[in-house]
Image 1 (cartoon, rainbow, N blue to C red):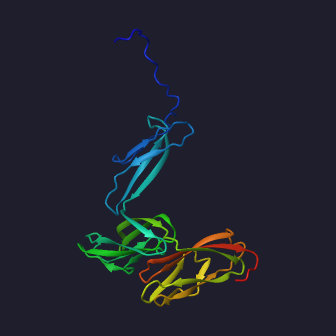
Image 2 (image 1 turned 90 degrees about the horizontal axis):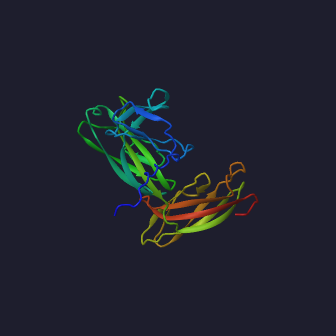
Image 3 (image 1 turned 90 degrees about the vertical axis):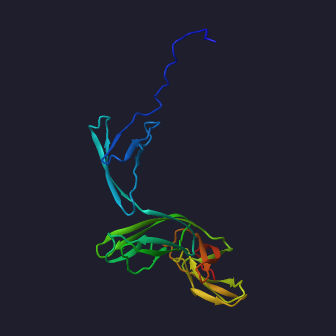
Amino acid sequence: MLPTHWGPPPPPLPLSSLAPQPVWISCSDPDVVAGVHERRQPTDPTEVSLKYKCQASPCVGRFLVLVYNDVWKHVLRETWEVLVHSLERIDLHALVGESTHAKISIRGSERGASGLVQCFSSAPSELRLTPEAPFALSSGSVNEIGVRLRPSTPGRQRYVVHAVELQSRKLVASWLINATQRLPAITKAFSLTVPLTLGANRKVSLTNPYTYDSRFFFRTDQPQLLAFKEAAIAIPAGESRYIGLSFVALSVSDMVASTVILRVFVNNDDDKNEECMEITVVYTDLAVQP
């Protein structure tokens, strides 16, 4: 059916809700796609998007981003220099307090064939590489590098590994290691009261659940607060021993909070977690007998 009433067309939707575009973008590299996100309110921050196709690792790309105040790009507002380091990505899942192992391969090329190559970690206290010493990398050969990650905190963490030719100081390869780190299961949880300026000594029982003699190693996520009488002990099959804990004496200025949660990791010979103890330490100014 045809409409019985003809009227003027409806008015266009108002555009007052959209803030005008504040800046215009141009790039020195024609392969870079740049744009300005639309703002809903004039007070919203200006967001600029950049899309760049990375080259093979370990290449470094460089381009300039020119920011203009007008659509004709006559008034230059800012100039940005963007450096893109291409790295090969490796994903790891690890438990806090124990070692997780992986391997990465490096292939020799004409660029890195002469001289010795050495690998470096951005966090050598947590991510260690094997071999640590320089090694020869000939053209066409493939070398395997061992990676051992022992994280100290849970969450997501990024580590960078560089392989450098020592004679020319040229970058041969780069890796970006994305690690998802989580806490192991808590096997024991207890609380202690420790005099702040005196410290305290405590003992915790540990049983060997196996039918053979085993050796256990101890670590903590807060070594500045807790030390061990022995770094490792051997326990016969089915028997129990005590772990000696020494809580460090602190001054009032050194103390951040009156209650601190720290963890004790008990690992085996393979550096795998056997137990994880969670200790809630309540510091007091009163001299409490240990």
